[in-house]
Image (cartoon, rainbow, N blue to C red; front, side, top):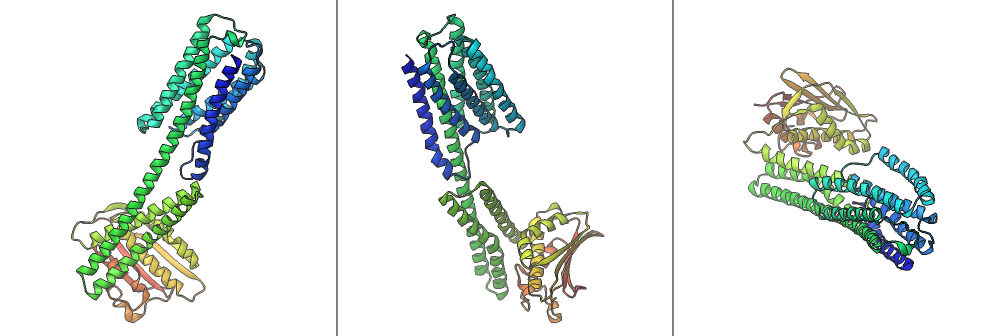
Length: 480
């Protein structure tokens, strides 16, 4: 009888060990979606508990007075149940340090408590107490799983809930047999066969629960992979739309003016989409090598989303700029928009050793198209950066000011670079003004003027007091 019972525990420990080894290599190769530490820890502890308990059964003489190794095994079973419960709770909300400390403290309470029962209690009392404790854990676990499944349906979590319900059923059955039998059990041979069957079935259901949790992790990996493929398709669609847009512009307009505009549009779109393509190649390389960390994954995804949004905004702006439809506007704070653009240009500003001076005193909210005004400001700031990079001055300064004026907001962008020659200032906002690099960058100052005019504002150029260039943009508070 002892050998048979011990064999049951060894077999279940071997099955759980096989599950652990099966996911270990996969665990090391995955960086985007890591398995829960609570689940992995619970599985490791459960394997140890089964092995120690099985060994204890082989050496036990008096069931009512077992050796100390039974305290160790039952403590490990208790810890494994806690970790599995924490995993289920973590599905709905992060586990706070207070809860973790509370369960750790409960372990230190459980050890002397069970040791006291081992010495002074009976087999029946110990079995009843363990059934009550694990049964309460199972109920709490089922509640957490039901709550998670309401918000996020999952077949694997459904299987886990069924396995946990079965564990609860067998724990109640064990408690009922112990209470109803009224026997005083001292030898392994005296344990009712039905009680042994219920105990083994409870551990089998626990093993199935671990398998279901492993399936849930695989399910999350599949969803993450599908999401990555969807994002790649969206990027390819943006690249295709970019090519179609440029091709349509070139075919529809054969003039030199339209050709120059199309080339500058292609340059503008190539920046965010080219960056996206490099990030995708880097992501694919790291995924194939299995060396992608969670921090790198989040950083790359954030960069992809930002670049895709920039490309989308450019395309949407171009569509609306050359149409007679209404401008899609929203209320924005100009100072917040300026700060977001400076984050985009920060690497180049630092590389060129440019000092940025901000005097953002405007408190007004303006009603404009965010994407179009962003393109205007980005173009003006990029022009200033290029002018400063060509300057021989030791101190390079980019100054941005905003102030409230009657009827709207005034924005001044100036630099202490070389400025614009007098003969080029008269044609500065014309489409074919290529007399200097400043007017030929990005979408060009002609398009900046076109966008500002569509918003009922104005843009003008004047020499800055520091000897460089200064652009003054006025935007009204409301749009007709």
